[in-house]
Length: 154
Length: 165
Image 1 (spheres, rainbow over the protein chains, first blue to last red):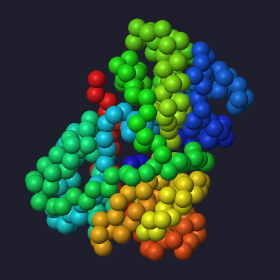
Image 2: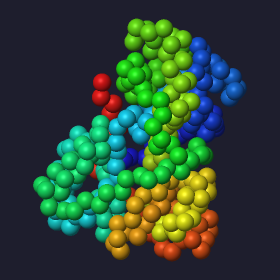
Image 3: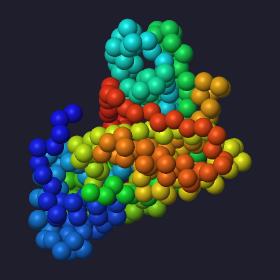
Image 4: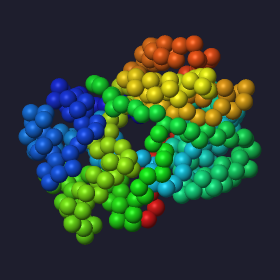
């Protein structure tokens, strides 16, 4: 990923720091949020648009909790030898149930999340991947999620 | 804990979720625009979003920063082997540290994977991540037997949450 070619100014940083949550649900939410930041409604909209276009933000809107949708998602990892890594990565990524996949520096070097409507469907995805790739999948379903504050500060 | 089954989203909630997956419209009255798009009453749209916020289906509404593009290029999954009797209490404390963006208890996988607490941290470089790991280590104290930090070296796939209709 290329670095950002847009330099955030002080107002941009205040927006990013202040609006990671708590965007109001009311008729004119930008007006309310802008007021708290000492901005106008149109200035706030323009700056969020610009931050999105510059990729300083990945999204603006409601952030949903996948666990509450009635579906299942499970973190899993594989140890894949270097010579086979790209083949297995392409195959894992091709499954629609795989939401994301990261290479990490460890003996367990491929970490991915499978999401589906039911835990059974997640498990059958893992079994399919194991049978095709020939590598064992370590399953790390979350047993408990701990509360996290919002806090990326620029 | 937040994995308790709460209020299940109904068909209209799911339409609303789908319509906002890419984000909220950047217009002065975004909820009114959504309502119009979905053929709903604006008050109903706002009431549904408030209810989904209250029960945790919506974690929050706001901007989602792009950590990597903003210079937080060192992404470390820190993993900890914590005494089972203490992990729930300590996990709450670790989650509250300002450096931690996600924090979960997960099962161990034998001797190859003794870790039961996962805490994600983001830094501008690995030195910063190491400093954060030291904060976590201090929080866990004697209850932690071992830990590791797994840095991500490549994003192989990243897609948003998919909601079927």
